[in-house]
Length: 441
Image (cartoon, rainbow, N blue to C red; front, side, top):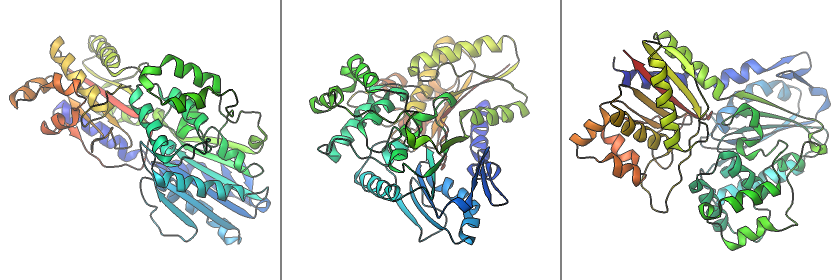
């Protein structure tokens, strides 16, 4: 088997075994009259209603996995109401569930309708209500309602488009989103003020920054409006915000997000079910079974894709001097600052093409894969791609220009033509991107 096929196999097998159902089944269970979620126990006799708000790329799978655990609530005659806003439809039709198709990476009219429905349901909650927030990556765009009532849907979409194209780190983008929105930065928790709240997360961010997942709709927010102003001042040209938007963020009366001392969090808990740590662990186990020495290095998280490519190839070269078969794993996201005119692709494919250029330039023997665990890379139908020392020559033999594809941010057509694009379709999961670098003597 070639290393190209081996890298694809490691990636696809990891996605297959990264199961939301298993994560929830092992963390949520009943004992006596109590529902145990991680280390927190909820006495069901204390509640009349259970409300579930599930938002993000994994929204439907999370609801599908939690639903069986809530059956004892039904047996007690307690009411359950749920809103699911996601990329896929829940497995079973249920009159207690309202589903909204989630839009990503840009919000749309449905995002606003879904936000209104969520706010209305949470506002009806009281101290006899247990609220579950099921949050996964992609939630930021899937529900949205601007704090400023004069901001239109079109202006909100442009705000998101500017962020996506800016090349900013995800923590910076989400600080701005939180302060723009009625449904982010802990504001959903405030809406359900007196209810007991439990947030379960499928994390597409570092474990130390869970408040960034989906722009933290139900968690305390450590970012401030002053942070937002500093981000804007330092990145004015890259953001290209309208004068109206800049004025909104610079308004001294801008409302602050929910902080940890807010009473809304007095009866709140949160738990990460799956994260990029699990992604690396499972991929590492797969690679180790194939005889590779496995190293995990996430230092280049949020770096520019070109810097990340240089760093990881340097690391791979170092490791191959020590071990005959090496698998270097790296989770997280690289950044790509897009021009106003660009082709079809995504950050994973752009990274892979840059690696193919460097491999050819350095005369290396290496195989590089980069893919999104959600099955989606940018505006392309691919999850990511793979390359090796033959990529540049194979492209040239087909009359394809890698440098032009990089400059035009048009990676997918070339990689697809080489049969090196990886197409999985939406996975219903989202725990960041995975990069797999292989070398074998």
